[in-house]
Image (tube, rainbow, N blue to C red; front, top):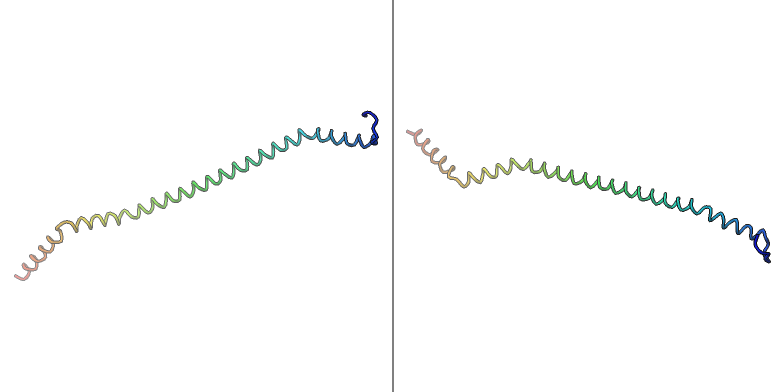
Length: 108
């Protein structure tokens, strides 16, 4: 014990014991803080990976939808192209001339 003081020796012993307990527990508390930080970082990492997977799934679904839309629009685009080509040509006039000639032959 320290030099005699006006404080009771049991009180100084109790304070000393408390101080030693705090010092003794310091490494364990520090390691606990490290473990908590590591667990938190791991949890955030898993959350980020799940979010990235969700975003990739959404992007894949959007790409698939665009592909299906393009597949379904091929026939209508081909029909529109063919219609515009027929409309720009003189096919209708030629067919009309042939029909008039056939009717004229039938009447003979």
